[in-house]
Image (cartoon, rainbow, N blue to C red; front, side, top):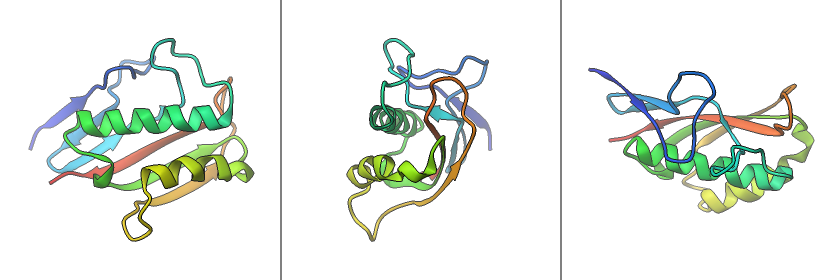
Length: 126
């Protein structure tokens, strides 16, 4: 099985790493933030950063050959974990069926700069 780097339009890292890596059916993302794809700036609010982050998640998993339905687990880091309502609003739009959602782990973190939230995911693509 060979490893394949995944890049997605409108998303990149400052370091020389891809948005995700796929080996066989497994797709692992790197860190995904709530940045504007046109400017690279963080969204002005937590709500906007959540929306932008999920837009990136969708584009990255699609660039890897899958869809949101293939995500098995997301890990989310938030500056203030007490503000999960903003995350949950976008989460419920992305995964409306309570019988068909990925696992999620949300942790508080000392995020740098204007970053209020970031995530990564694991997807299994058949």
